[in-house]
Image 1 (cartoon, rainbow, N blue to C red):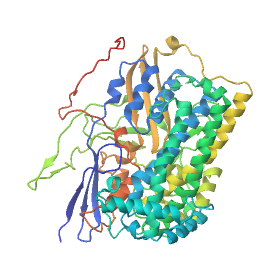
Image 2: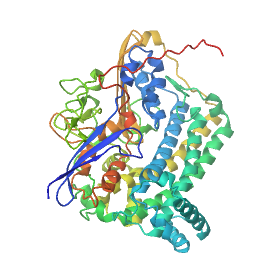
Image 3: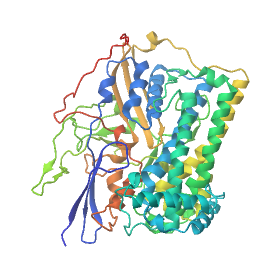
Image 4: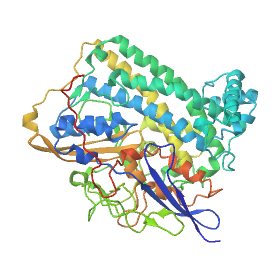
Length: 592
């Protein structure tokens, strides 16, 4: 049997446009793969010539999901350029806004973007509500808590509601799934738990968004962060606002611990055979022994570090997530991150360029070369040439993966006490080997572990803010002389976004931006091959995966979704000739 070329376009349930092409052999095993983003991003070009103090308000439009993190990274890049250290209140408030974003983003990803890769909605219709309630309690016990939905009544009601939709042919958000695919492994009762929590998560994510809005002003696109600090003075000095934040945090933490974590234990256990090819112990992995499971991919993990815990300034403070790089899944070794070793290559990207460039010197010049139209009527990627609007980031001439799993891997390798505690507790409760982390299932588990950690530490931050405000410290902004610092300077904002290492780089001359580059998590992970032909993280993760039904590429989607793709962060719109599609002018003086 000849090899078969599969095209999955678009990959659904993500933000943005993503195309995956794969080659499977006679055993339906993927032997080659390519990742392509099919839209262009021009935000960097738009920012040229702007006042750097306004950059954040434009840069946040890079993405419609993690708007606040692009906003903050952009502001921090300018603060780094100007040598500004923000007050304690501003640091804590920024941490709370970002922490709420992490909780919101991870919860939405697992339930509304990724869960249906594990949960068969139609199978849930044959579940016994009584058995389902017992099953939910069982996995909650594994997580050391009680079930979020108690008793059979709610499960029965949800089952009947979904059954009604199916009978009427109105599956809606559950339509067009690969229901019945043999690579779904949950029982009917487990599937009903997943569906029930999916629906509950629609409500709980709204409360998480409110947390961001309390100090951010609104969600999405918060507006309370400015160069030098934050503007939400009245929210900081009002105990009722902090109390409201803490109340919402308590409600959402309950869902994370009583629903999200148990569901990940359940899925991780049922899909454990895909998650590991070895039973290496934690000690063995700390000694550099063990291999990755299905979807492991590059096994090189990088984290910039993030969430400052003191006020010693950028890149000096202790952080919640440590920075570092782990190669080959070897937890016994971790290297420091050197920002000077970051570069972007465009050999297989639809941009002009001759060599990898550091972001300070980066260029965003479109050079679209099209697709290869075959006789079968399908337009394929020109995989030997340029085939994606995403550039190929490299660190020290190496391809790396970023994201929640990378943060957990680096944290354990750094022997960070807090992260190591949460990771080992998760594995111990689930009776899972550490090697399960190096897989698609491991990425999903890493995200859940991080969400629990974030929920817990945010209680500490909220108390810290309340205590500081009660002491009379209401400082929220550091004054600086823009005219003196904006002659010629440059700065970077490098921290962790929900999906991984995020960097914004800015050059300023005579008070205006002369160059701006953003290298985002989905650029690191979704990138095409580089100048040496080496795969990006998405591509590498697909190699060796067996597809049960090539007409239903569930395994491809499940693996790619484990990264939580957000392709709009990496691309935006231009026509095929690289020209502007339109110019719009807003008259701010217009009255109605």
